Length: 374
View 1: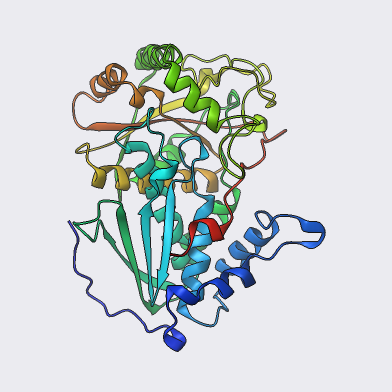
View 2 (view 1 turned 90 degrees about the vertical axis):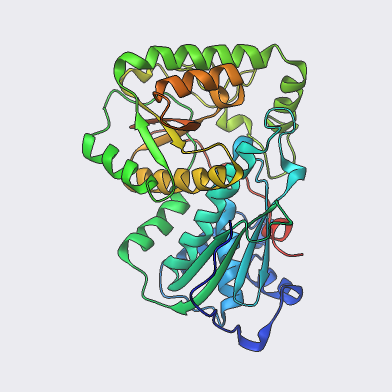
């Protein structure tokens, strides 16, 4: 599955290896005055640096910055199931099974999809910082958790598109509130669809099929709520008892069930996110899909999700991934039927125009030192 690289990677200044990466990370992610964690101000510095020709002294620092920027990628329940290693002119992505949802996601489908989003974020940070890169997916047949190898081989001027995507990485967030009555324009939907097509496909559902999608999502959620192990796993990753700097905080969980034909995740308790009185009547629903149901396809689906979401963010569109119907086999069959059998479903996406008031905060992220290194 791996493919050969046509370019020779550039040499890192001083030929530093991953073992002496720590000083670079410490310099990039210092705590702010008053002990404020680095997750907000330092990350803004990373993205700002990536939006202009980089001033980092060598490629090793640029790779460390890209891996740090990728911490902003979306993941199932904000588990952040990835691990990075920085080497000489290369960056390697691994699945961290310690943060896999063993019961909800036993095949690691959603974990690998999440890693695909992180891979696309890292690649976006590098290209937005003026680097040419090559990516090899699953480079080591003996290690199925080694998901990707990124090589940096040249400098280049960042394109306007790359710079816009870097900015969108900073602005992207998950919003579970109902969308407004303003529909998404056809040209915007086309742009989001085209953005995903380098890695996968989106199929917009016609209005008369949304009820069927809603039934599948409702069935999946009921099946999961009746499962004690599923409830325990969700409770571990959501609310006040979640792991530090991971999981879904109360501020991102709706304070009551939303009015919608297609229910979003039921966390089993009211959170602190005020959902208002809106209804998703004018939301657009699409299925993210691909040719097969293998780890390679899941990794590419994550890259497609990231590309679509960043484009949606650029264009002022709220995108909400919905995975319940993928998690339950019987509901997945309904999604396949909605696709007319042309591919394998990976996620349902809701697209709409969000209320700009009371935007939910971004969810916390692990410190870069926790996910970068040996």
